[in-house]
Image (cartoon, rainbow, N blue to C red; front, side, top):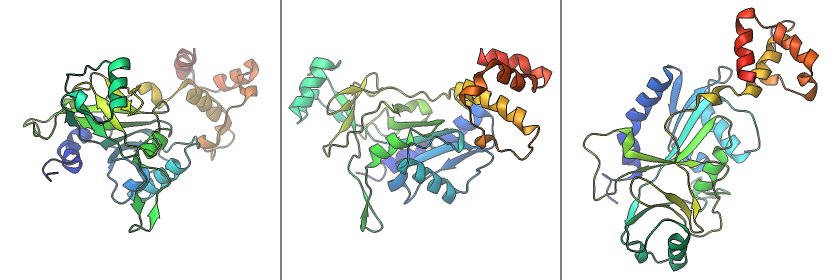
Length: 292
């Protein structure tokens, strides 16, 4: 593939646009961008944009070590992020017509169960399923890039997506670039692992990604919005923890918020009223509005 049309080139062409998008969206100077080098084999993404909790504030090396640990141990609930976006770039190729694909079983499934027709042109992005080598080929990851992204998506307040262009090599890069040139496909707990050792693609009905499917056993894929859900910044449970933290911190000024846990007794009316009455008067209405 030409060096002028590659995943790396795609990343570089839209790098500054992503940075500007998130800085404008959140009006925050604490947003940081992380580009993995050799770490990509462990964490799976091409670009990470995150706002870290104040107790962390990792250096780049620490950031990748923490993220690698969470990918290896996805059951851990703690997050270092107020929010984080992780994107893996993939190029798309044209399948013209759809009936030309070699996997006739997949072709039959796309026709019978999905919205494709035999004569249409379709598009697909090849997924990296097989584990890669590292340490100069001496070691092999226990899982491939796709599974790493699925594991990454389990980090609280992390949004993970494949990022594909709405154009192919024959089209070339748009002369005037904008983020709408890109198509985001969500990776989350419902995304199939596809770790059966076979070749797999993400199929698109058209360049715009009107419909898309994880294949070879087609499962509908979901578009990922570029807009961040502010609700994720603080859930009702987070707010309840904050109420408890505020109450306990009056006697222990060194208390760490992350150490505060909620148990059943905290939901008893008398206990809750202790938390609530410890709040300043001006914040009580907001607390009731969110918890209610």
